[in-house]
Image (cartoon, rainbow, N blue to C red; front, side, top):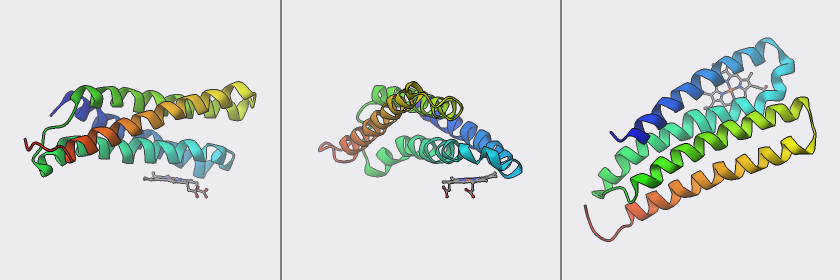
Length: 135
Ligand code: HEM
């Protein structure tokens, strides 16, 4: 198993644990409902998406009888997906408590990094599955 595949699966489980604890705190203290965006995106971009990236990178090329187009791109995607997610949610949280425009802009900037990571997965997977030469 490639290192970035294992790392995606590890981080997916880490985000699941963090988001679950946050969810329990949200039930106990409804003022924390302002962090619903953080909880839901830790779950969906962290737990769900990263598990799918990890398992998908490992399994989908094999299903199609191909080699992954670029492992280097997978490694870069791992870092951009994590930096984008942590940055986006961190600055979003700071923006709740200090709603100056700066944190909003940083939230958007890291959201764009997250989106770039999604496009890398899109390209790598499509270029792998639809490659002309069989592995
Ligand atoms: C220990 C497990 C979990 C706890 C304690 C928990 C708790 C919560 C709470 C308290 C809310 C706010 C609900 C409200 O607005 O009334 C919420 C929202 C949400 N949760 Fe969780 N949750 C858990 C697991 C999950 C999982 C596994 C996912 C997805 C993979 C998830 C995705 C979401 C989403 C998308 C929202 C936003 C829903 C909306 O905006 O209406 N949660 N969760």
